[in-house]
Length: 278
Image (cartoon, rainbow, N blue to C red; front, side):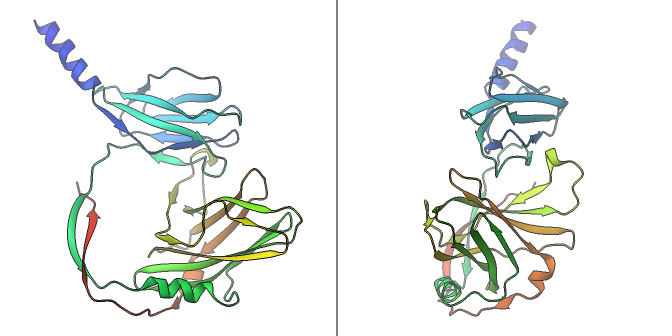
């Protein structure tokens, strides 16, 4: 009878599983998955994905080739038998991250009163006119990019990304990635990065910059800060090409933020997600 109870208990725990954020991999960068306790990999190995258990609570993944088929890694906690299903996809730009794997806790909704800014005014203002207050610029393969007009409005930080193509080959944008990282990294395989996602952006999917064409795109984020040992990396990736551009915003650049005061609307009831504090 006792043995049957143990078997039933294990079967119950084995049915508890958690979906996780996507782990991006490439041939050149190793992505590290950190768990809170000892785990074991229970999914079958595939020829295009190298999965290694470096420590009891550390699993690394790396692609063996660019012809990669999206898959899922199944990892089980040793003590509780909980199973984590981690999607894996190929992306050179987003690979090489340090990912903390945790149980996903749904946020608690809460209604708060806020005075909403008309941020469309800010975006229109930054998108118009010539670039100003350039904080970084880079050029590759006839394509040049500038970070400029770094500004703050309400509780949002904005900047403009200018792109000009002087080559005969059109420049099609795949995606733009933004992440805060430490300047001093001990190991490349598990660099400590905090990826941030813009709350608003004027960049459309499949944007292409033709020969002698220039575009200006505006991005807005939750207000953030940087220490002297941190930077915000802005990575611009070309679709089906290698003319990738890497730009940076440093702590000193945030000291000179231009303040914009857009018109306020009347306070409204806003449904927001407040993270649960454990």
